[in-house]
Length: 223
Image (cartoon, rainbow, N blue to C red):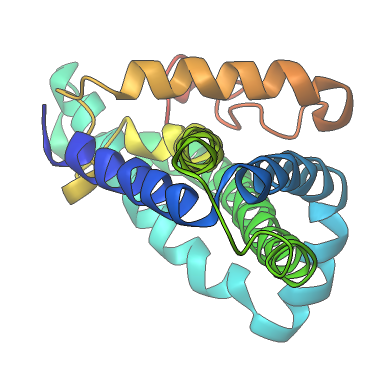
């Protein structure tokens, strides 16, 4: 178990505690709301990105950082293959440029999807709180226990979605707290993400496809 696993467990525990405090009806409602938020985010994230990108100018900020990130990975790969250091940049630059464009678009897509998911979840939770909270003032222990279960499930859905979307970035490079090489929970979270994809595949299309698979130098690399 590493830091990544501990962070995930803390998040899930926090979700369980919140669910225990809110009760069964609130927990179930929020779980359904979380599923609805995923569908909305998958369907409308491209329109959302078109709205915020001109205002924030995210592409200009992200693209240089991704280019440098990919350059380090490619240089390491070519050096390990015995390519002389002086020729590394010349050989790799066309592939790096192509991959930078593809990965920048992917990062913007998953970023807009996650942001829209969070915003829709917050709105749904707020509406649920207004409607259900006055009704659920007196909660039994069993009701709170049911709320804890649904709180854990609701949090787990959010964690699986986040980890699955950023997995291409987590599996390469130095990612600090989110290093998953020795993680116990990471494979299970990816199983959960695959289950989510199975449920939304009719809406997702190829939007979540690894953007580097079509570039020979990066073939098979989960960056």
